[in-house]
Length: 214
Image (cartoon, rainbow, N blue to C red; front, side, top):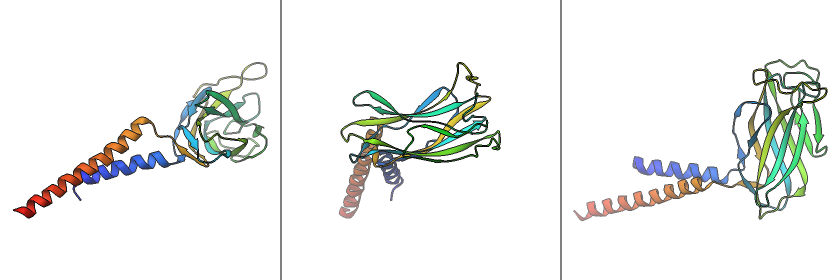
């Protein structure tokens, strides 16, 4: 197979894979607390509740429930109707001590991660959160998730401790029963790949025909 044709095929396969996956491995971080990260946009394939899994990274001394508490949240964005719903809120000991506590939702959530007795290394850690909601997603709407970490401030809390002390990130996430919505650039990449393949094949056929006629 000519090199050009191989390149076109590889480009098309990559674009198709991006367009069809419902799981994303997107290592992000370290980020300071009080920042957010958005997932890729997605659509629900069936009229089912939201079910997501996210692997959250902690750098240095993210705290669980204590006076230095840092809270992890997940917000569901209905892009079509421009509405936002918080679907998860919890705090985890990722190097700074404190207890692991899930505030909401209290049902449909499982997680595994560091111990809650403060014995985890101060270099950080990670926690895997598996959560589900009760309200079904609308198959005609486009959605995204916003992941965020916030350092609590005000009476009894230390507030933001700078990136040098507490940072966070997302190792990976998945959203069950959905398909990612490719951006226009991805569709153009895929169409260009398939179009290039067709052109290359036509050129190859004309070359073979011309050779046969000689």
